[in-house]
Image 1 (cartoon, rainbow, N blue to C red):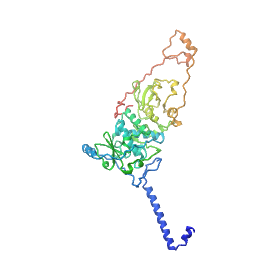
Image 2: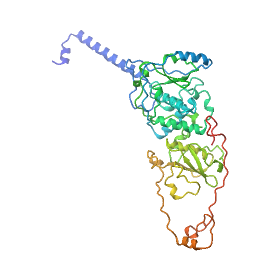
Image 3: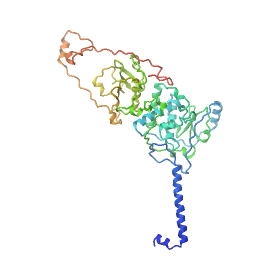
Image 4: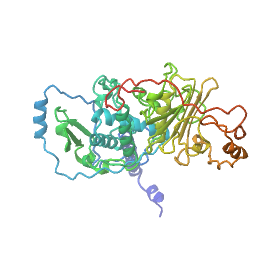
Length: 465
């Protein structure tokens, strides 16, 4: 006998009670489902590639409150901090984090992470790695935003109480030196490519030992790194299971506070790195073009060293730092070409392959790593990469493939010249070797250069060119 038939033979009162119970059960299921959705940890956007972790006991995600530190009594704070014992529980190393997202997002993330590491830890590699690990731990924890820039600049709109104090206390008015900034970017790039700073484990908080935040006693004290103390959430929310195993980021926000350091965070940063004709421009045309001359040869400019200047000052050759994300090379173009309607930067990552002067030999073009060309009047602006060297670059940003030309065959004019007693000017060639009118000596370049405004190699000093 079917269930429907059985129910039909029941008294009406019993059938009514069964229907009422079913309605109650359905209502309870709907309420539980709504409660679960309403209380699901917020991921603050952007392509989470795994289920958000939930505590086995359904305890809520910890609340992240504004960070307010009292540094008025440092000696008392050190004594109180010393009284808080370190955890005796295991401190597993965090999982390696490999950034997944578009190239422009990775550039922005690298600069945000570098800023957090440099402003929080100074030009110290160990301290930077410890801070960087905390930032990445927060990125993977349900309590925090799901972009690197979102984590670093969380609360930046406040005058006080931001999560990382440098973002709202005026510290960013101090421009880091170029060398220090590039070191921080290199360290950030390594961490976004999987490097882990194991000692801090899954720490999500830290502070110096001369301040005493209200939350110090409510978290597990993990380790001390120099004068900084590192903490993780208590209970399950501080264990590996509480952190995302995978994360895919669709976009990183633009941080205007970083625009002075990072072209990728300028309003037009995304277009400038696209390698196609632009509606905007990488170059700041409000700046008067600076005269650049021989005294800058060999000096650092952003991610590399200047190697040569074209007569007239409209073109530049550089040797760039190898490794890391090649999109950062746009910074050199932004610095050199500021205020120039016509400008080009040609660059190599091999010092041995870098030409030492203009004009360039055809043979050197095949090994060129990066180029930037701008003609404001024509509306042309392009950034291109050597895709043999950087195979992950989208095809739209690839240079044309070049092959070195075979050596020219010996001409009859060469033999005649060697037998002749006529002495040609230094650097000149017989007319038979070249187009009419080019029998002239090769002259050395002669131009004047801008003197740097400050020592770019000194951390914390105002940035030079």
